[in-house]
Amino acid sequence: AQAIVTLQGSDMCTWGVSPPPSGCPTTPASQEELTVRVAVFPGAPAGSYTVTTAPGGGACTNTTSGSEPNPVIETCTIDFDTGTPIVLTTTGPAGAVFAGWSGTCAPVGPNQANAQMDGPRDCTATWGP
Image (cartoon, rainbow, N blue to C red; front, top):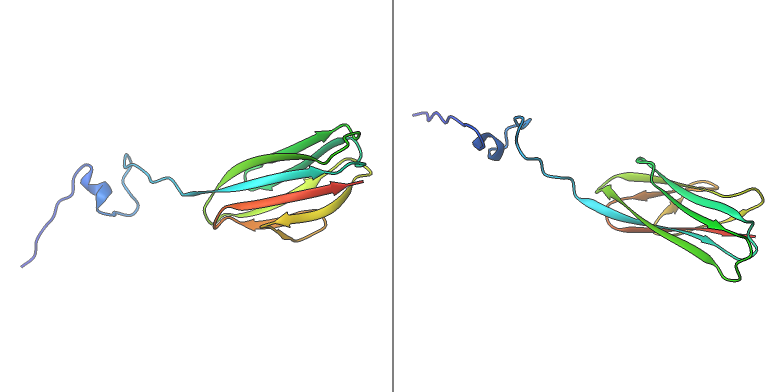
Protein backbone atom coordinates (compact mmCIF):
# COMPACT_ATOMS: atom_id res chain seq x y z
CA ALA A 1 0.00 0.00 0.00
CA GLN A 2 1.17 3.49 -0.72
CA ALA A 3 0.53 6.52 1.40
CA ILE A 4 0.12 9.90 -0.13
CA VAL A 5 1.34 12.80 1.97
CA THR A 6 0.41 16.32 1.03
CA LEU A 7 2.65 19.04 2.46
CA GLN A 8 1.21 22.48 2.88
CA GLY A 9 2.37 25.83 4.23
CA SER A 10 5.08 25.65 6.88
CA ASP A 11 5.24 21.85 6.58
CA MET A 12 7.20 22.39 3.36
CA CYS A 13 9.87 24.22 5.34
CA THR A 14 10.36 21.47 7.94
CA TRP A 15 10.45 18.48 5.59
CA GLY A 16 13.76 19.41 3.94
CA VAL A 17 12.38 20.20 0.50
CA SER A 18 15.26 21.40 -1.64
CA PRO A 19 15.34 24.18 -2.57
CA PRO A 20 13.11 25.42 0.22
CA PRO A 21 9.99 27.21 -0.93
CA SER A 22 10.00 30.99 -0.73
CA GLY A 23 8.86 32.27 2.63
CA CYS A 24 10.66 29.57 4.62
CA PRO A 25 12.92 30.90 7.37
CA THR A 26 16.59 30.51 6.53
CA THR A 27 19.19 29.43 8.99
CA PRO A 28 22.00 31.97 9.08
CA ALA A 29 25.47 30.62 8.42
CA SER A 30 27.55 30.18 11.52
CA GLN A 31 30.17 32.87 12.04
CA GLU A 32 33.79 32.87 13.17
CA GLU A 33 35.62 35.92 14.49
CA LEU A 34 38.86 37.20 12.97
CA THR A 35 40.82 39.50 15.27
CA VAL A 36 43.21 41.70 13.30
CA ARG A 37 45.98 43.73 14.90
CA VAL A 38 48.13 46.35 13.22
CA ALA A 39 51.24 46.90 15.36
CA VAL A 40 53.53 49.85 14.62
CA PHE A 41 56.81 50.13 16.54
CA PRO A 42 58.70 53.31 17.50
CA GLY A 43 60.76 54.78 14.70
CA ALA A 44 58.32 53.75 11.96
CA PRO A 45 57.31 56.60 9.67
CA ALA A 46 54.17 58.60 10.40
CA GLY A 47 51.12 57.59 8.42
CA SER A 48 48.44 54.96 8.01
CA TYR A 49 49.12 51.26 8.30
CA THR A 50 46.24 49.06 7.14
CA VAL A 51 45.21 45.42 6.93
CA THR A 52 42.42 44.67 4.46
CA THR A 53 40.54 41.39 4.14
CA ALA A 54 39.08 39.67 1.10
CA PRO A 55 36.39 38.69 0.53
CA GLY A 56 34.30 41.36 2.15
CA GLY A 57 36.65 44.31 2.08
CA GLY A 58 37.03 44.65 5.85
CA ALA A 59 39.84 46.89 7.04
CA CYS A 60 41.77 47.72 10.19
CA THR A 61 43.84 50.93 10.15
CA ASN A 62 46.44 52.27 12.57
CA THR A 63 47.45 55.90 12.02
CA THR A 64 50.55 57.05 13.86
CA SER A 65 52.43 60.33 14.21
CA GLY A 66 55.82 58.61 14.03
CA SER A 67 56.87 60.02 17.40
CA GLU A 68 55.20 57.52 19.76
CA PRO A 69 57.66 56.18 22.37
CA ASN A 70 55.90 52.78 22.58
CA PRO A 71 54.37 50.40 20.06
CA VAL A 72 50.92 51.46 18.88
CA ILE A 73 48.53 48.58 18.32
CA GLU A 74 45.11 48.89 16.70
CA THR A 75 42.76 45.91 17.17
CA CYS A 76 39.70 45.17 15.03
CA THR A 77 37.34 42.20 14.81
CA ILE A 78 35.55 41.04 11.68
CA ASP A 79 33.07 38.16 11.44
CA PHE A 80 33.12 35.72 8.53
CA ASP A 81 31.00 32.69 7.64
CA THR A 82 32.52 29.49 8.98
CA GLY A 83 34.78 27.86 6.39
CA THR A 84 35.54 31.03 4.44
CA PRO A 85 39.15 31.33 3.21
CA ILE A 86 40.44 34.85 3.91
CA VAL A 87 43.34 36.76 2.35
CA LEU A 88 44.81 39.54 4.49
CA THR A 89 46.90 42.28 2.85
CA THR A 90 48.84 44.92 4.76
CA THR A 91 50.08 48.27 3.48
CA GLY A 92 52.02 51.12 5.06
CA PRO A 93 53.43 54.54 4.19
CA ALA A 94 56.57 55.08 2.10
CA GLY A 95 59.71 54.14 3.99
CA ALA A 96 57.95 51.77 6.39
CA VAL A 97 59.35 48.27 6.85
CA PHE A 98 56.92 45.37 7.20
CA ALA A 99 58.37 42.99 9.81
CA GLY A 100 55.92 40.10 9.30
CA TRP A 101 52.78 38.28 10.36
CA SER A 102 52.11 36.47 13.62
CA GLY A 103 49.18 34.58 15.08
CA THR A 104 46.91 32.03 13.44
CA CYS A 105 47.40 33.14 9.85
CA ALA A 106 49.87 31.82 7.28
CA PRO A 107 52.18 34.27 5.47
CA VAL A 108 51.96 33.76 1.68
CA GLY A 109 53.84 36.74 0.31
CA PRO A 110 55.74 39.82 1.30
CA ASN A 111 52.63 41.54 2.66
CA GLN A 112 49.89 38.88 2.51
CA ALA A 113 48.64 36.08 4.74
CA ASN A 114 45.85 33.52 4.57
CA ALA A 115 43.42 32.44 7.28
CA GLN A 116 40.86 29.64 7.04
CA MET A 117 37.84 30.58 9.11
CA ASP A 118 37.18 27.15 10.60
CA GLY A 119 37.48 28.65 14.08
CA PRO A 120 38.39 31.99 15.69
CA ARG A 121 41.56 33.48 14.18
CA ASP A 122 43.99 36.12 15.41
CA CYS A 123 46.45 37.77 13.00
CA THR A 124 48.92 40.58 13.65
CA ALA A 125 50.76 42.63 11.01
CA THR A 126 53.89 44.17 12.54
CA TRP A 127 55.63 47.27 11.16
CA GLY A 128 58.94 48.76 12.22
CA PRO A 129 61.35 51.55 11.28
